[in-house]
Amino acid sequence: MIISTITEAIGSTPLYRFTAKDYPMPKNSAIYAKLEYMNPGGSIKDRLGEYLINTGFANGNIDHETTIIEPTAGNTGIGIALAAQQFHLKTIFVVPEKFSIEKQQLMKALGAEIIHTPSELGIKGAIEKSKSLAKEIRNSYLPLQFENSDNPAAYYHTLGPELWDELGNNLHSFVAGIGSGGTFAGTSAYLKEQNENIRLIGVEPEGSILNGGLPGSHKIEGIGVEFIPPFLSGLTIDHFETVSDEEGFSYTRQLAEKQGLLVGSSSGAAFAAALKEVQLVPDGHSVVTIFPDAADRYLSKNIYL
Ligand code: PMP
Image 1 (cartoon, rainbow, N blue to C red):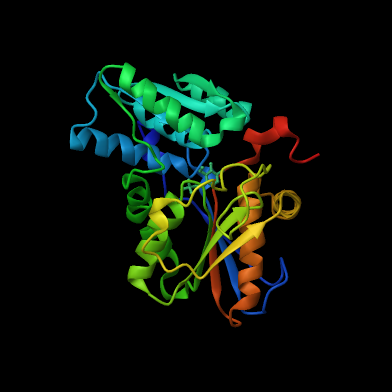
Image 2 (cartoon, rainbow, N blue to C red):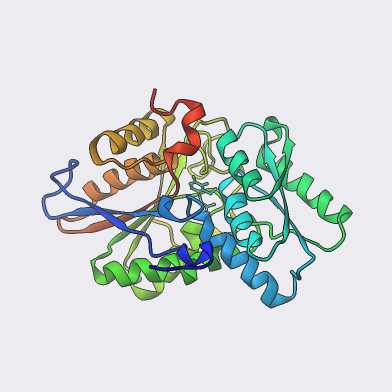
């Protein structure tokens, strides 16, 4: 594959197949994991970054002088920065302090400015700060991934069709972590249109509210919500699986040790939920899940120690 802009390398990621030889599951069943960490910016959010910048230009929200501002835990920032860089656009990301330093360095490497908000204000604090910056800075564009329907649309148009092309009627359950909810909602909507019998399983860490729990801190990064993402309305979701930090990190380590899959903790959590789902559905069913990003952006948090 010869390319001349890095964004051309986004998408068409490998689909890894696990069988009963690898992990406990009925003998004819399989779990497939989409290796989204193999995108050029290292995460599933490259798809969103490219989509937001392209639609921003198409809708007239962005021109060549626009400053892009966004609250982000990191991966969305990296994805937006990668796409924005192709057009020499300025980017400012508002990041709660607690998030990984590696992601912040990657955003900076791509030319972004980082503004911190206090960890205790959570992502809500970052959203407020971004909104006030957008009012101050002339010709700025705030995509606001948590509210913007372009977020699920990015996955409806890319990840959903890729999975359907790869698995088609051999896809029985879709299991994915929920942060902004864009990946889960957009991919689910596309898959349900192809086959309404596909089961939908959302994954959250303990400390997230989707199963009625109280908001609290968790070490698994990238998933978990303090409010119900608006994108989930209209979807029939079969189940939310709540995964503890301990279980999520245990699978994150196992995936490296056994399969050489150097993934982040939201992948470990998604895999924990996929292993439960594959036991619940009939033998011969296939469960597909997403491994959103890579381990190396969490090494400062000692994820393997
Ligand atoms: N995993 C990781 C590592 C992420 O950064 C994100 C995005 N915050 C997700 C999962 C969840 O994706 P979404 O925001 O589309 O729900």
